[in-house]
Length: 472
Image: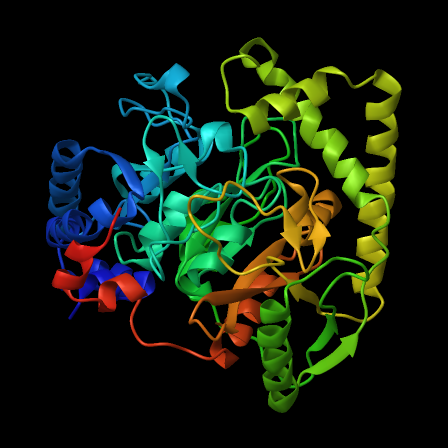
């Protein structure tokens, strides 16, 4: 059995049945990292020694019939934006190249309690800004489907590691598109949950943490280890982690899907439209009722630009020390006035209500492109034009996701098929506020209908001699 390509759900079951030890599993993944990571640059800090010691502790517990939690013994690497106690956390910035925190981010603490074995960190752009994963500390991460292309971002290191079999699943974070975009580019399932489902030490619901995995069931398993009520943290929701275990797909027949390829006015590449059109036919053949419709989200682009800039203004003291796109965003935030910010908050509340009412009118989900373009060259920082339509800033090209962010509704990217060049394309599903479990069940159904390609990625199907010949 190829442990590194196995479902996380199956690995968890084997660990609990003591058919597999945490040390054996960690050893397999560390070997895969040695083989694949030099090509992809997805994992940027490793801590094998402490991870091996932790795996041994968990095996001793299992021998006594004791298990730490639902993720007992499963290996993981944490996105380099999230603090990990005793393990370097750079935020993708040379300003923090040697920073070792003495605390865990809230979701990391929950993951430890759930039994994971943390053995490293995954790459991210500087302070998570941008849907392309590169920085001045570690360089660029490459797409497992084609290492000449980007895996997206900002959770690109996490997505590339999962898609290439270096991790069974991974955490990501999502503001504009940072879980959903790399999930689409790497052929994964990536969930942006309802704010508060995964506790965070922030009062800003626009930015959330979410799981990346090779299936909806694996994403739900990881979610079970990251969610849970915490009265000491803002926006924490009283969801029970056990609800996400043993995820069962929804019955496709009768599902009512609002379908849009452009939210009414977005430029979308012909390749993406073609893949989604074929996938829509598969949905209809399965018994789903697919209706051409979309919610009225006018004003969402302006609201997102303002609220994102407010967050970026917190880096004001670093404006002359960061990459230019981030500096632009910081300056935009510093120039905002109180009335501008207040107006954006009011309009966001209106947009939330519009999405809520739209879904309540009889739709189980809204379906739309996750990303408006397929993966692009790793040397290109951001998409400047889509089907001849100029994209003015480094975040304009992800509006199919950022508009959904403004609504605060949960959204998940699910593989929908492949372009003629074999590149993954994701469909984004938006569900009712707080209905993350239902959304994942529908995602599992959509996932089962999508065209498949054998193997976890192009990289894992390529011979060692071919890998050695690639320029990286």
